[in-house]
Length: 541
Image (cartoon, rainbow, N blue to C red; front, side, top):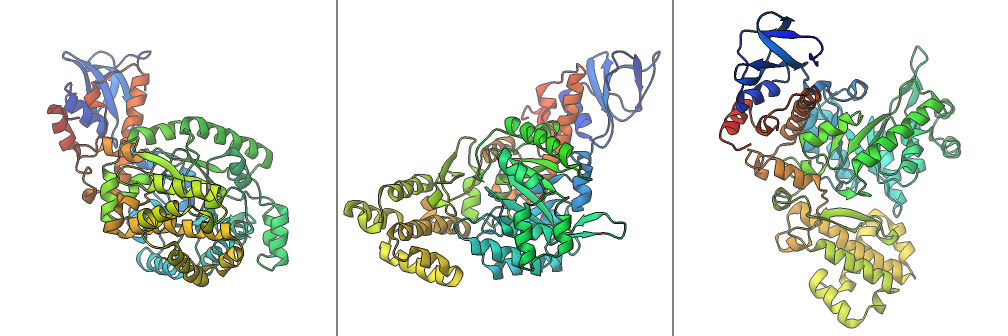
């Protein structure tokens, strides 16, 4: 509220604070209104009280309403997913977004996506059984990652989700639609007793390009729906309903993030996708417009507040959660992440899309993985098979990167794919280049496993998915209890990011009314209010 055009005074029992610590406390009391007034000592701030007519009390400069973090973002998102906050923890493959992480966040009113990609079906089933037993009735999502080189894995993942009644899936790394993701969505469509369409299978699509976003925003392709109907995988009624609902309920705009990313800046990408959503909504007239959320680079309350200010319905975090105790990352990996700076990331070849030249963003500080993975891709491009690699280069591979004969690595690949996806071996038969790709992918896959389990003698080969948000987060929590990785818990991090976002949103509102605060009073830090006030006095903030 800007009172410059309507002179008012403030009344209350508590005298407004004029020092930085007191102003911080008033701003941080986000459950109560904050009033900024003129005092004999200068500008003061106080939480609570009430404005009244001019004539007595202290002249009122500006005021902001209470803003608990539960009010940030889309109420429709919170209602649809049954959560308290418009925030979710995005999936990190290989169980890094672990069952423990999902459970901890669900209990505190947050959505989290289980990192099922790359896990064996029995491992995923154990996690789903835990969710049913430990958080019955609470929301969660499970990740479905696009697997262009291993179509069987994507198909089997969807079949597993359907068997276990998974009601929310986060689809990631899709470059185009597949029958499997369409099957998951359409097979959950029905009408309620009032004739309204109900999507029993909620789909969150994580995208980084407008052309991909549009595929998820529109109804499922008729050709795919017809194919599913002919195979008996959906009903005729569901095929009809598929014509009038979008493929996804929520579209997450993934900017400069860890893992698969195009590294596009959020301020450029998010408005583009929001306009696209509005265009599609104008054409389709969906009863419930698609919600658009923001991900990538969200490691501080200021960044989260900015995402909401740009129109994000919800926010998604990733890298920062990997450094928390509940993540599936090893203690050694969490320690590396806790020391990362904002520039300590680099692109490297992705295991799941190696032959296509697709890259993902990883940590480079403390590991040689990015350099070694890029060398493997250079060799893949230069030679037609392992046998064509010069002897000197092969020796370096076997002694420095693989640390074992390449023939032995191939035998490991044979054993693995015989159990998991025999089609991969069939495609490699008589194809030396394909065989070389599988051997090189062995290193890329194992480097993630070494990081997850904390293989001590392989620390220089750790593949750690990480974006610049990690460095931003580390800088923000300096001198706080969250600086050591051993103190980081996902629910604490989520609470502080959302409370801090509410704090900075109110600060921005007051600044727009012409109020300027001391810098130390307008910077939310993850410590209790009393400790924050003390820190301001000591000049630590």
